[in-house]
Image 1 (tube, one colour):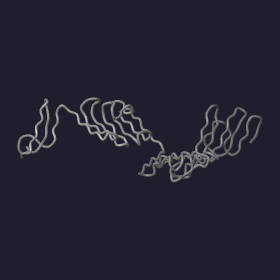
Image 2 (cartoon, rainbow, N blue to C red):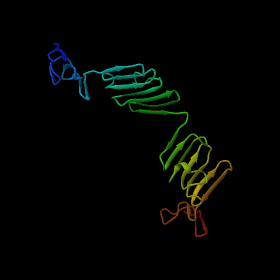
Image 3 (cartoon, rainbow, N blue to C red):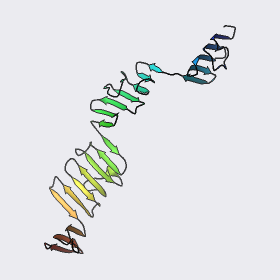
Image 4 (cartoon, rainbow, N blue to C red):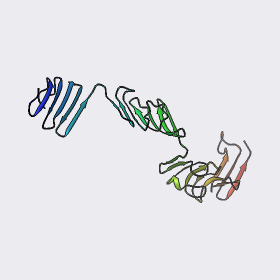
Length: 219
């Protein structure tokens, strides 16, 4: 039907109809396309309602599909169709698969039970834990501020790809190895190397405490 303020086709004749089938629009800006309860497009004042058993949106840079892989979203100049894609962009779907792809050397992919991270330059700064490949052929550090740890500074753990290593307190008890100097340092006011104590644990050992050094080779 048609009159001066509305146009309607099918069994929808007003801006309040929510059942039936057809198209309705009026001069007040109301618009309804209803196929059934699960397939509708309704514009009512400031609200927009969309329902569809299957939804597909495709542009040059966006793919949004409800029927593929339990729902999928893909973004990029050439959107990937699944998690195995190799085009730059973002892909994710309702099965839990995810891909953020820059190029073959820079991507994050979660495919089923497999998680793959590849990067030409990687840094993880979690406060107490710091991992990076930007310095010293790669380094791992743990401490109150892992990013400030080094072979000579900070209390905690430090190791790098150059062969340097340290665990312990800054300028205190600990073990360190300086690869460039070929220097191994073990510092402690008390230490035990070997097995010592009452039977049956008595054995060969080297120990030190209170400025004294004890060496035993007895069983």
